[in-house]
Length: 332
Image (cartoon, rainbow, N blue to C red; front, side):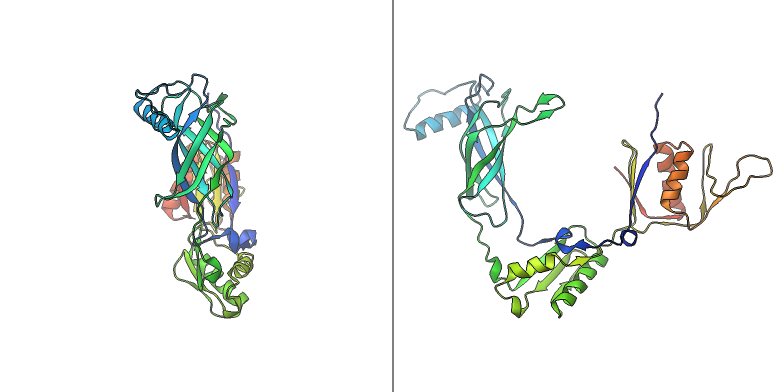
């Protein structure tokens, strides 16, 4: 017999919370982001758990020996070697000599990368240029479902930046910020807050995502200081009225100003009683949910009646279709 747990309701509203957020937590600044790096390399020193052949691995081994001054005439095959893809992230404003964490993943049929060492591997950006090199002993890491993920490993500080991205950030005349969650109301509030704090019309919200800020004359060549101040200005971010339901875990998250209009609910054998009273037959009455009833009250009442996740989903969808529930419903 399947037993359904009551839905856990988490509600968040912009006005209900009455908490402001730092602009830093709401936006990203154009040009300030990580850049993915990728490279192809060889892991050696495996205890018979490598690829054991294959065109790519064998060709790579032969080229490696040629680089070292050797000239093998035949293909080199070894179960102690594995072909891998190496990835890393070049941080914003990364400088030459700065260390990076790298991830190493097998691309052949190696059984395990445990105990292996990555040979020197150049890491390229999307433009095809080399921005870092990596090498070093591999760390397999933790468990996954009780087993080692032996074909993926990491090398903490295993990469070194060799080339910098040229960004004259402190010489900018304007900066562009993008909202992590596009919203017209929040964008307008950020624009208004920045202009009030800077004492002029410096910020312009051009759409629900983009806020452009002109650098004031008194902040020229002090863009870092300006951004440090802007990041800590606080605004109340608006949240769309949305209900997200996770049927697998029995979790329901309600965000924004959700409106529950005057309505009545009946689902199968379930009868929701909000006010006291009964009908003439003595059976449980069919009562009206007052407009002041919150979504939290409704879920609590339905949980008390032993409502299953399937029941709750159906009820919310019917309320929305009827126009009694003003919110988006998303199932995950």
